[in-house]
Image 1 (cartoon, rainbow, N blue to C red):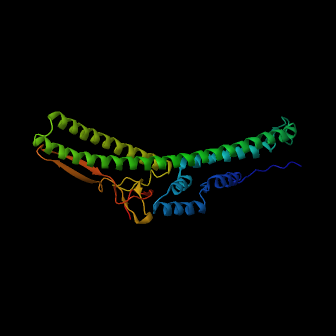
Image 2 (cartoon, rainbow, N blue to C red):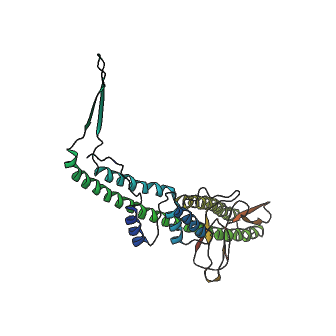
Length: 302
């Protein structure tokens, strides 16, 4: 008896091992989007996380659930599992048929044949062991890729926080130098300091302005990098820069953040007698020291 059929398999088989290992080692949940109802639940979970301030752990969780490149890595499991299933099957039989029509008339003669390689029966155990080893290797590779990705997201989060704090420090330094230059210019007008001292003080102010602009660019770059790894590049509303800005709600402290081109504030420091002023973008103002968290969308809060 010859039985012919089609083999089917569950794409999520093997992913459960990856998910268990990742959750045990990182404490984070991973989901493979396969167009099921679970995908909608994951989307709601991501939306709920983005609606509030994000810690480093929450940013990693959003990235693990939302990054599309990570979803593509999971497809390697499906390929390896398909190879495993294929290794346990016989090769497809070859059917051959011929019809002979007698010249003198009479019934048509049919000649049918089926060719099957019975040597495959002996190769199946060997192929299955090799494919099973490759499948286990694929699970380990995917698990390692997920854990490495989680570490990358966490590093991007802390890098952006550090850049924000450096920008705030440069703003404080800039205000201090502006006030110092104001005093220096008055002393120069009174004849208490030389032109060289005034020029040196002005050079320090200009250098601080350059460093401040460079820090602003660095913050935007780190913000874009964090957005990318979190899979937020398609969640940018019109007129706003979707992403994160430094903010905290702990201990009653408040760190106001920049949420886009319409909410940037600026402080202008006039320099008496010079006809020019020093304008500093106020990207963050710390009301009192607090531990830092991150809010999606760059909004401000208390």
